[in-house]
Length: 330
Ligand code: NDP
Image (cartoon, rainbow, N blue to C red; front, side, top):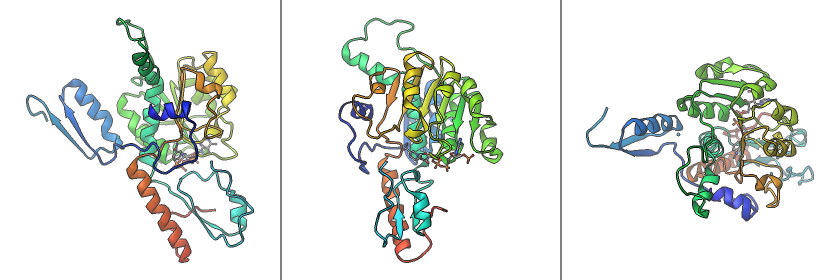
C-alpha cells in the first residue's frame, strides 16, 4: 500500500536497490496464534511461500528500464552484470556482435517476485487499497452485505502467461488457495513443468477467455511486446482480474485502460508499467479498479542483498576471465 501510494503521489525516481524493500516469507518463521480452522487454512496457504517453520499457540497443542545499454558505450566494455533476471533493457544484438558477456540473476528473485505477484493479485481482486481508503476517509459505516466485495480464488481458473521460473512459483503459491484449474501459455507446451499443477497448455486467446485470473510472468521479447491488447482484454470475462509482474511493454496500456473503464474486465494489478516511473497524471492511476506498484517484485531485503552478491560474483568472474556463475547464453 505504501508502494501503491508512492506510485500514485511521489513518482518513483530512479531504481534504488533497497527502496520499498520489505520482509519476505521465504525461510521465515511464522507464528500462528490460534490454530483453528482459519489459522490452519492460513498456514496451508503460506507453506508454499517457503516458510521454514511454523510455531503456534493455542489452548491445547494441535498436531510463501533503464534505457538500453547504449550501443555507443566504449570499446573496452567486456562484461555487463545486470541486477535483474530480465534482460530486455540490454541491446542484446549489439552485445552479441561485440562479444560482450552478460551476467544476470535468475532464480534468486523468483520467490520474492512470485510472492509479490500473489500479494498484488489479492490486493486487486479483494480491493484492498480501496478498502484501506474507505477506512481512512470515513466510508466505513454500518455493515453492508455487498460492500467492497471482490472475487476469490477458491474454485477459480487461473491462467499463467509464461510458465517459467516465476510463473511456476506463482502457481505453486496459488494452488492451496483452492484454484480448480490452471491454464498456461508459452512458446510451446512444457509438460514437465505443468504436471505439478495439472496445468493445461492453451493458446493465448483461450487462456483469456477461460481464466478468472490472468497472471503475466513471461519475459519481454519482440514476440510478447503488446501481447495483452484490445483483442486479449475483449476476450476476458467481465468478472476477471488481470495481473502483470513481467514487463510493462507486454501490455497495451491504452487498451487496458479502456477495458477497466468500460467494465470489460473487473480489475487489474500492475507491478510494471510503460514507462517507468509512470507519470503521476497517468489515466490508469485514477482508476479504483487498478492497483499499481512501482516495480517492487524482488524488493525484499534478503533478495536484494543476495542479488547484489550474485551480481558482484558475475562481474568479478568476468573480470578474471572465468565462467560467470550466471551467464546469459547469447
Ligand atoms: P523464465 O525465462 O524462467 O520465464 C520466462 C517465460 O516467458 C517462459 O516460460 C517463456 O515460455 C515465457 N514466454 C516467452 N515467450 C512467450 C510468449 N510468446 N508467450 C507466452 N510466454 C512466453 O524467466 P523468469 O520466470 O525468471 O522471469 C520472467 C520475467 O519476469 C523476467 O523476464 C522479467 O521481465 C520479469 N521479472 C519481473 C520482476 C519484477 O520486479 N516485477 C522481477 C523479476 C523478473 P517458454 O517456457 O514456453 O519459452
